[in-house]
Image 1 (cartoon, rainbow, N blue to C red):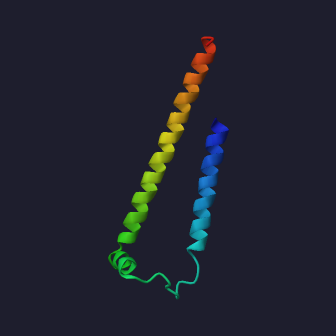
Image 2: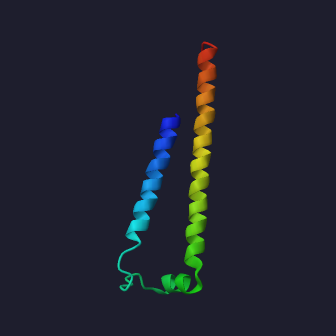
Image 3: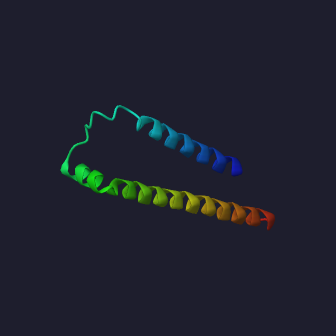
Length: 83
């Protein structure tokens, strides 16, 4: 189980690194124009949105890892009692 969690965390970390690498493209060409994008960028709210989404994602991952541990513990307990 620890190996699964470790590999999942490594995969997520590599995914995030690749996203940050793509963010370093040519910044002179702004192809994402529009009133919504301009509003969020002008007020600096885009970083708040990214931060909130990151917190939610991390919370879901932590919840799933804790749930997996509980299920594994219950499975072991059932196997010990000879069910």
